[in-house]
Image (cartoon, rainbow, N blue to C red; front, side):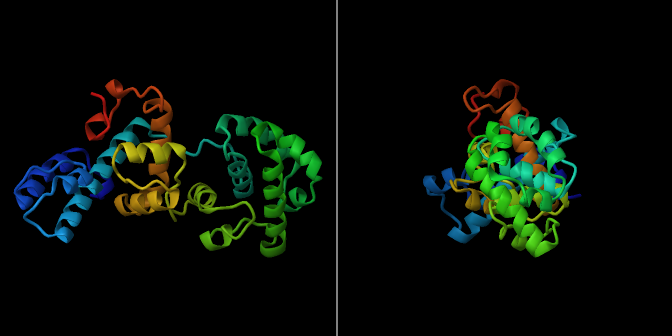
Length: 261
């Protein structure tokens, strides 16, 4: 059975083993263990044990949220890789709902990278104004489309290295496109929901998206990388709401070190 299919039980079953190994009580939070000065094993052994517990914790979280959100998918509406790339660029500091209201007309007007590259900048800015930061976004869209025409025959490439070389495309955007349009798990999308919730769950204590992604990639099995992001995003929107988390109805509250219940 894939580790990501495990339930909470392996996490709880593993804790006594870890506790016996170190001869002291061990919390699910490995960082608290370190602060408590657990002795009896060397630092490397303790890090390995802590990582094992966190990996099983992540597996339990993934399994439960998979059952809560069996149809989890990208919230942006698209039909082609180019459409998803455009929508993801527009989604920066904008809600997916707003982007989805904006893109139908945009996609109907610009049906190819060539058509988008030839767009009038002022007209394009007007068409995407509602998504915010429209001047910079229009510049990114025009540059990205021109690069696709010049370097890739108008097609969206399906590798991380090629995508991040496009204007306006960083690792997060590339992960969205690769994971959803091409079904390639090259990384974990870290948006504001994923960053906040992974910290609350103590799956990481990093604060930058790149380092958070690295930690999550080490804890979640690769085939689940794209879905795990969707799960945390949906969980953040439905239950773990920033200003009013619903811990009392949370399906993973007993796996969360920040739970209020």
